[in-house]
Each structure stands twice: as C-alpha cells, then as structure tokens.
Length: 155
Image 1: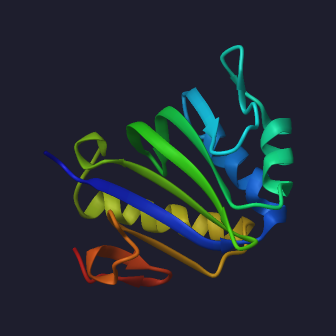
Image 2: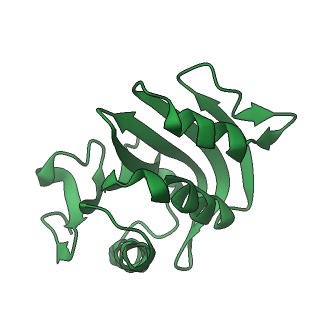
C-alpha cells in the first residue's frame, strides 16, 4: 500500500484562510465534498459553502474543515484526488493538502520541484510561518522533501 504525501502551511493567519482555500480549490477540476468537525453546513446541494466556512473559522473552538477535490494542479503536475484540510487549534491555523503517492503525477524530482515552486508562489500571496512537503506525517522532519527554502532530507 502506498503512503500519503502532504504539503503543509503552518501558522497561517485567519485573514488568509479563505483566500488560500479559494486559491487551492480554483486549481482543481472539481470539488467532490466538504465537511466540518463542528456543526457548520459547509456542503449543501453538491456545493462547497464558503459563507459557512467563513463562519466556522470565526468559531471560538478548535475545528477542522475538510475539502475533497479532484484533478488538483500543482505547477503542471496533476493529482487525481486530494484532501485539503483547514485545521484551527488554539487560535492558530494550519492548511494542508494530502494525496496518495500513487496518485501523484510525477513521483520524482520533477514532482518535488513542482511542489517546491508551488510553495514559493503561495508564499508570495499568503503569509505563513513554515511550509513543508513530505511523506505523512510530514511534521517528522526526516520524512520531508523540503522545508521552506531548503530541499531534503528526502530526494
């Protein structure tokens, strides 16, 4: 069984959560579903509800919003199916995109380069403390292909 790969943007400000989500979703062919860990109706009549997501991220408690997409493009590399997560904890936000490594278009140096370039493009638009890409759990530095501007340790 193949593992999961994930790109994580840590400690994103609340103001950029919706623009980030909209940006990533706009890079997908379609949104398949959305759900929230709390009682917010973020999926209705086959559509993601950005107004409900906006209200959810204002909620005082910790929560997560999950959005499933198909045909997600990263700088020319297409992932057939991906999960976008918005995780709110202790007033902070992390945003990540995960997908099965078998689903990843070019699972080699070109793919890592594409995601590295994608992270740099996102960094121009969205402020975050850290960005990394690796095998799940990419929070383990030994499983990363890059962290911020530094490639490795995986190749």
